[in-house]
Length: 136
Image 1: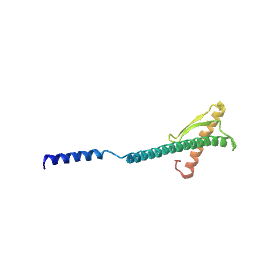
Image 2: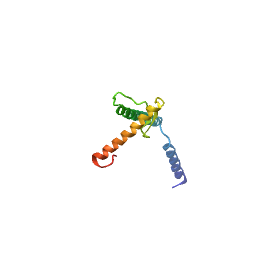
Image 3: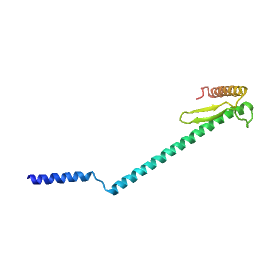
Image 4: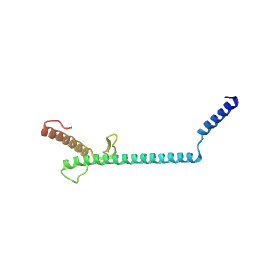
């Protein structure tokens, strides 16, 4: 192989390598569209996850309030009674809730809390009595 032939091969190889890194305008446009579609799908999923979390938190909040109201209903034997304690915030992920007692008088709060404890013990005692094993 002569120097001239080797030079031609080197020039062709250099040209081929330089073309390999180039993309056409259409290819760049397709890539941009794919990235935009991926971003939209990712944003939609993020929004859906946030919405599902808000629904779950709201459900936990309502469930916690129902438990407080049920204690008061059982204590007063009035199905229309509501607890003076109000659930102000709840988190499904943390399995926690905040309860506002500012609307409760000291006596009312004490009565509700004592009723809650006694009903909890009654429930635990009934479950042990029924099958001889502690409740889970």
